[in-house]
Length: 194
Image 1 (cartoon, rainbow, N blue to C red):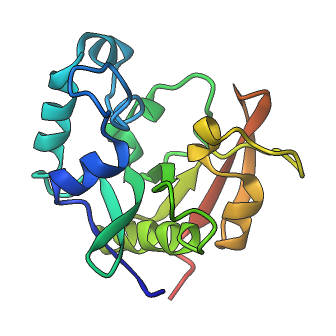
Image 2 (cartoon, rainbow, N blue to C red; image 1 turned 180 degrees about the horizontal axis):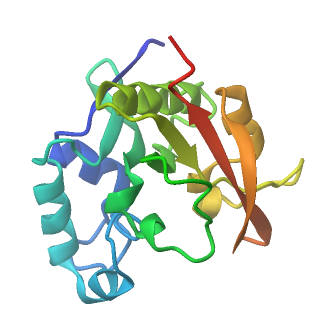
């Protein structure tokens, strides 16, 4: 399998990965962290969530990246400047410094394609996408689960081990807990990479 990673400019492909089965459903669409206020997140309901994503994929930069196996979309990673996300004001996830970092908060592999080595190209692709946009560093906020299993519905944040294998380093603990596991702040500093 050869995975190709591209900017998320296809609404249909983003919808395949993070959209609901019913258009009127009030599910994430991977907007919960992308929107800068919880008020906006609460007020954006049903089909309006999908329309907000449709607008985001037309922006420069788009809201993330997609992984493809041939013509089939098989993965999604949400990555964007932290300043344009809810992480900018999140009290549970600390700001390590004033560096204008990008946040990588969701890594999702399409059902039927899990366990096939798609996560690493997604993380690497998100880092390269951020680098191409001038990001000095990329942060993520995975769970530190040790060897314990993470529920698939909460696995989108990734695990500490997964990000460490992709060259990220733990730089801070957080006050955030997901699925009973503490979340940590990991960072990959792109300024020191050639």
